[in-house]
Length: 416
Image 1: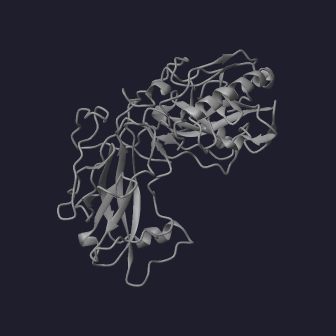
Image 2: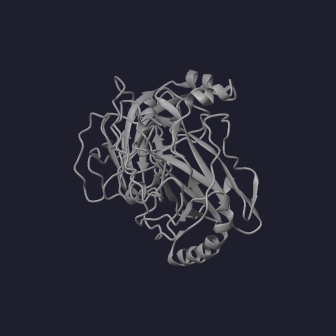
Image 3: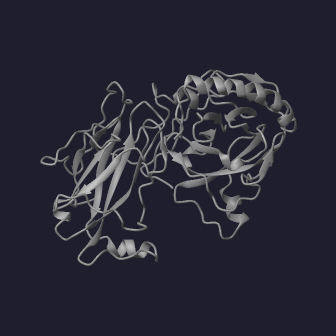
């Protein structure tokens, strides 16, 4: 996840802007939009998406750093972008919500701590620190048949063992967004008082930890452990948001009598969260290009639109989106003004909507799709469509947050 630049990196980016500003006048002469430095200044787009969430999923909103630089605008020319045309579920909850507690968003579910001797009870929500909430939703003590059926290359568990699946809800309700679901550590403990092995292979509906989350976002998914017959009756999860695995919180993970309703996410960009201004008033409007780092400029060329029917017609091998989701296409342009050549693959564009969770950016074969693998030399540009798998309630809203490289703060772009 991109880290906020220090003062030195900001100075170097300002220096680079002088070079890019001159180059972009030529580079984007064929593109014809205004190049604007993205940041938490007031660049202009009203893209607050407060979306009603249904009982199945929470929309996503992807990353947003808090210390983006002030905007510098360079007049540049414009082009038409080629016109073209997993997921995580959000969750309702029966757990009462709390008022904001200093560093939490309003509506965050109440959480509690738990020890090895007194774990968080089944159905209750655990506070695992730093704004994270965790809940055991269901447990399948013997999930071996389901795991073996999921992938032909899965190997069976060791003799005398089985695969146990624990379905969990995980959410972030802190203000320092975006975060990653990879941040918390979640492990399990059985009868032998030893951490359980997680080497189950490919499992059904795995928890997607390689996803960004903004304040209020939540997902539901499965994690798996290799267990012996003695483990499920005493199974516990232990989790921490601390990188050094301190302050661990324990949760009862024995089989509940019935599946538990997961806690509910909080919808829309949240007041006081680090990324909220960038996602709303700070998002660059359609047709404005922003320096996204490493010599690249990016722009959304036309409003996002539902291209589900077109994608399915483009290629008979394309799978339809998951139930409740749609394919959304965004026409974009990328221009390069660095040294030598580079590939648009260096530029990462992510979608986030009212559900405060990053949405997947792969729809299958899409006609007119942006070619991010071709070499682009200084002065060159590429245009095309990017496609995202978006909850139906988020179609017509959402922003892209875009960065080149691993240490660049993302710039936000409106899509409507």
